[in-house]
Length: 401
Image (tube, rainbow, N blue to C red; front, side):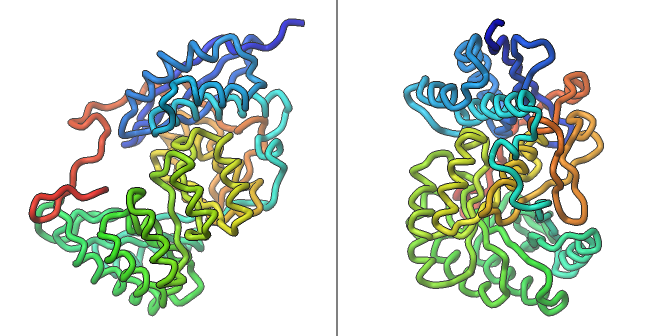
């Protein structure tokens, strides 16, 4: 009996909605046996495709797909200069696809390979935004009616390019100033708590857009409104400020969306400076690295809250779900709703019901990609080729997104 081998690696690029998605398909010598993995890095998609096709594809062809850890370690160091979002996402596509293959060979969902269920379903949070407080409140109530208990709330700052909300009022939509934002956000949560009460869990994302000292002051002011968590108060370049923040407030903190290597997140976990780990799992290398990170976080009381917006493919969401089901220190899962177009490209999308994701009871990750459907939605041309548009302060200084 011949040993199973990886015979080919294909990269599938598709954009059924506004976001560029990258999925890797790993084929094997067993007819019909293949796996899929998420490698989505929207802002530098073409670079990820090159890394997979020119470097990882020839590196893994001929290897045994059962050797997930060995392939991960060997591929990780094969570039010598390693890590970074491009190389990590490329590696993630291979890694997740290998876990998908192993689940199919075992005739089990991947969460069973990770230790089995710790919960029956996975609570998720969704996003409510608005041009003013009343519109945010209206959208929160709509999600509550759909069964959501956890809702991230963002409000527009008049005349500014506000993260997570449409611009409100006149002004240059690419201009941003932190002080007006810091004044309006506490008023938003005072309004929401007064109108909605304490039963709904509210979240907010600073998105690293303000100076650290302003973020500390804002966190202290928001503590009275009992947020489930406050996300990304600082950029990765400013993580030492977490020590100061911890001394100033007990507001729960989520961080990690922009992290790509261990030197960024290990110190925050071991020193108990954050409460929720929010990495984009393909940005740290895939399922193999994320399951280790989740286990590490468990020992320090840090809960998981994996990044899960529209620039995570349904394959990536399925990998998040597998981890969420199996991790005792699960906290919450971010979710972007799947449109009909996305569901057509990705048969078997995770089911969203009553504000939660439910297990995919199929072998492997449980989601597939229809290459013919995917081909109907090629990457669309754009001035920045998928990159973030620059946002500047009134004096012209570039602001971190």
